[in-house]
Structures are given as structure tokens and as C-alpha cells.
Image (tube, rainbow, N blue to C red; front, side, top):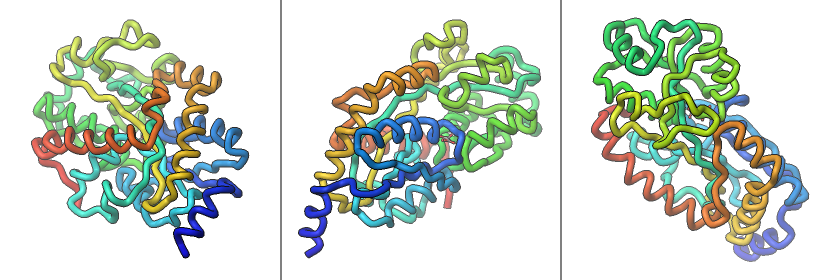
Length: 312
Ligand code: MLT
């Protein structure tokens, strides 16, 4: 009966509003990506996709919410690399990462930037490293909780300089940015989707990008490797998921819609301004996202184990 009901539903899909859960605060980088894509997909699907922000626990609360939702195509999750890192970072997760979801497709690739409040003393990455080592008891690092991209990047930075700093967790880097702008916290490693406007406006200081090459939007900003952190590269990717059991007709329909949205001129232009790369048509597919998640879990597991930081 349920199989019949599922395929009958899939035929007319979508018949009502769809909710896309973003597992971080409104106004942050994941939210920005989700709202741009959701708006464009809504036009193609003929039904609205509403973004719901379910922040907390580094993205795992929102992911857990979607894992438990009805598998009918009306609740989706847009999450990033944290889907892969949290599988190792959390000793106990409320869901089984590789078995609790169906896949729609990859959405974007986004580099990160190491940034600081505007009046923070160090002027370049080398200066930041020396300063952080000399002032490890007072320097504060903002992140969006264990499992966030900012957490991963901050953890890599602290391990690279062999110095543990005080971390300050938020429900997203949207609110963390507000505190960086207000001078309540010193540094952060955050996606360009969230930092570009502030860096260009001179309201925060940027030390490096985490991409293998410099970015077109910041030709003068060195890569972390150029600035002295050997092997320091991190790229954030986003994907759209649905609860396990969502019919393949539905995830395929959503994937087609996602592919169109990523070619939408407005979406591409906005992403371009924010140093955010839309995924190719071949990557905006269920199979590509599944493969990416599997390979990224395997890739980050030893890095996290070496850092020895876990959440219970
Ligand atoms: C956000 O949307 O707030 C971010 O993606 C948080 C993070 O992962 O650093």
C-alpha cells in the first residue's frame, strides 16, 4: 500500500509547498546558498520551496530533523561538508549518515577565508600565527559548532600551528560574523559566501584563502599555502538530501530542477560575486552526491582522528 501511495504521489509531485531545512542560522553562508537555489527551483517546480533554519549542534540538529521527516519529497535538507565530518566527529548521532537519506545532488563548491575583526593586530598570516602562539590564552576563534565548516577549518588551523585557542560556538556563521564585526570575537575561518562583502567593504581583515589557487575576486589575497601553511587546503561543498524512502521519481525531479537552477543567470551571477562555484550538471545528481559523501567521510576520518576532537 505504501509503495503504491508513494508512486501515486510522485506522479503529481510537487502539489504543495516544500520545506528546505538549512541546519544553520538565517543570513549565513548555507542559508544564502539555499535561498538562491530554492527561489530558482520554486519557479521550475511551480511550488514554493520555503527555507527553514534549524541551527544547533554544528548542523546535526537540522540533519536529524530531516532524517525523521516523512519521505514524501516535502522536506529536504541542504547541508555542506559537515554532513561528512560529523559522521566521525560525533560519537553518537541521532541518525546514521549513510543510511538515513536519499540524494538529490551537489550544489556548490566554496572556498574559505581566514579572517579577523578589523582592528585585530596581526597584518598577515605569518603575523597571525606568531600572535596566536604568543597569546593563546586570549585569542578567540568563532565557529558554528562541532561539525560546521568553520569548525573544521579552525581545527585544521590550530593543528597546523600546534596551538589550541579558545573557540566560541554559534548556531551559524551569520551570527558569528555579527560578533566579528562588533569586535566581540577575534578570528574565524568562514566561507566566501559569507565573508566576501565584508572583506571588500573593509569591515573585516582577511589573511588567506583556503583554495589551491588565489580567487578571481581577491587577486591580492594569498592562499594559506603561499602564506606559509603547507598542505592547508579546504573546500566546502553543499548537497541536497531527502529522508530515506523518498521515491526516486521525486529525487530525480528535484535533481533536474537543481540542474536548471544552477544554470540560472541570476543564481550564477550571485554565486560568482561570492566566490561560490555552482556544481556541474553531472554533479547535481543523486549518484554524484552519494559518491561525494562516501569519499568525504573516508577522507576526513583520519584527519579528525589525528586531531582527536570529538563531540559526545
Ligand atoms: C552557516 O551557514 O552558518 C555555516 O555554513 C556555518 C559553518 O559551517 O561554518
